[in-house]
Image (cartoon, rainbow, N blue to C red; front, side):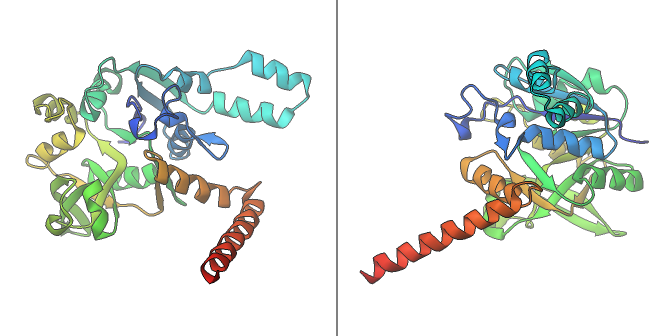
Length: 298
């Protein structure tokens, strides 16, 4: 069965990016000339998924406004005869069939996905997190849908990370069977010395409707939130779940240093400003290192 629907979890506070995210959703933080969430929706559309549900929360109205039609901006651009930007806005407004559902209480990623049950119905669907971006020749979610068509079971996107960084992620222990990675365990933020592997989960999944049953069975974590990883850990005890090592560059925008690194990376490959930005960085780095050398020499 083809994957027709996707759920984007975008209700969190973005507290690691304060004060920038006090009034601006972290998913709307600009990465060069687009908000982060637009890259995610474009990834879905490129993979052939047009029915998208975004789980939002209080203060997330800017997400809806971004993908809505803006008559005032259109009128201003028309007066300036800016046809190129008008075409860009029209493409954004017509990207996909986007729906919104508010998570009134921020009770975790599991609770957010559970709210999508009525919209998803009885078919497999994709889940994406709003602060993970993947740059790849084949859309990341498309790699997962291809894997799902072969395996017919839930798929977790994974990527190798340095062993010293595994404590920041959910890490899978998988067994190789007929060329596929069957997930045996999912460990949340393990100590590096105790991690079962260095395969970290990134924010892309394919689930079948039974994920909702497992979400209904998990208890809240110590924080009071219901975590999606807890439901996955329960699910692997009862049915096959596979890990797909995706190709591409994984970026995150959930904390300040990662956001800055992502922005620089995207700017360097931007078709309009990439070369100019590269030259700027060269000059800046040369001046910086020259200044350091002079200072040390003095």
